[in-house]
Length: 139
Image (cartoon, rainbow, N blue to C red; front, top):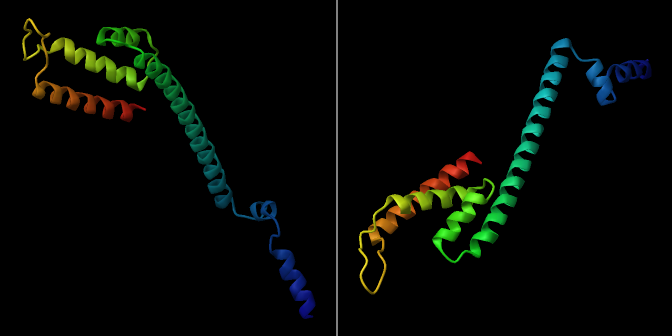
């Protein structure tokens, strides 16, 4: 008698994930379907972000290789103009815009060209920090 009861109880308990799902209620099945859909969506988003990061990294590497060979700010600006979009290109474009819009505080003399003052250089650093943060947030 006990053996028969144990066999009946054993048959009532699902032994595989498929049996567990098939024997569940309708609400449970709906929840499982919703979770499966959301899981696929999240994996799709993660894969898309991974591709985007790889593209940005590749474009940044190409830009930096060319940028390191530049001998002047004008050459670096030209490289930035012809390079594909990348985080370093955005920062370089912002630096170039700041320098062209800023009048050097230290005027030129016969011995040297006009230069930015220490406070202007600090302002440039702050602008570039801000731009770096904005670019990081975009990616």
